Image 1 (cartoon, one colour):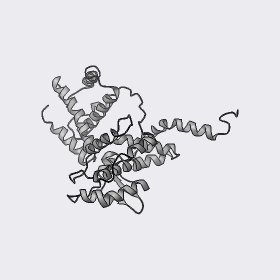
Image 2 (cartoon, one colour):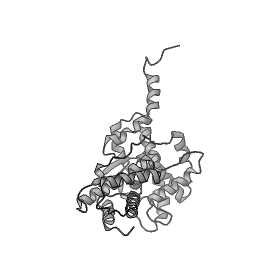
Image 3 (cartoon, one colour):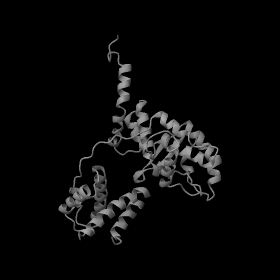
Image 4 (cartoon, helix red, strand yellow):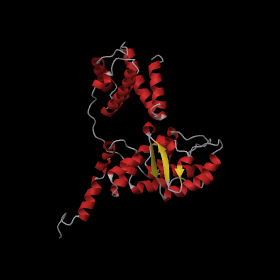
Length: 300
């Protein structure tokens, strides 16, 4: 595919106007480039595609690429956003992708860690070392706040209010919110700031999380650290920053936190995005019901 100036402008729009993370932008780019390569193969102009062309593209994804429904829907979402931008900028007459419905997604419940699994994970970092302090803080802060990985690596020391134990987070769409942290997180935060980060910060960085060269830790770096830590446990699960975010939300609901509060803490714009966590707490609700409701079960 030749260099596409419209795509480059769209990626700049995502970065500077929408404030999307580099990781998210790369994902959008990959989806759109795959689509543009397909059009090139079929000798189609991306500014003149019709509904029927898109249906053939979906068949290509399903039958030739063997993509699952979730991947196809993600790619459609990327292209829908791209064509909305093209239409707004008058590169195309209309957003043809607004007419396209993707395949039905099978509902996947969020994967999360049990309390004992998190305890095992938190015991891995060696806080006698600089990077061990950083890695434990990374775990504790992801779990204590429920922030997204892009939000985590963007935290600056000045964003932390130590007296009120909260952090100012810049979320999606440049929306600000405050998240809380507790005493476990506070203890390792103070240790890291006075020892590990103080020594690592050879470049006088404003950011909280630094790599071993003194630069800002990246999202990819966080994922690498988590992969390394999980391999040192007996936990037979893949790990991601979002899985710890899922654990934060699930555990709050399990302990009786209301859904609206969890929505605000997660930074969800709509309550619908938070409601998926109610499914994973069903077992907990049953347990509480049978232990609390006087006529739930008969005495022997």
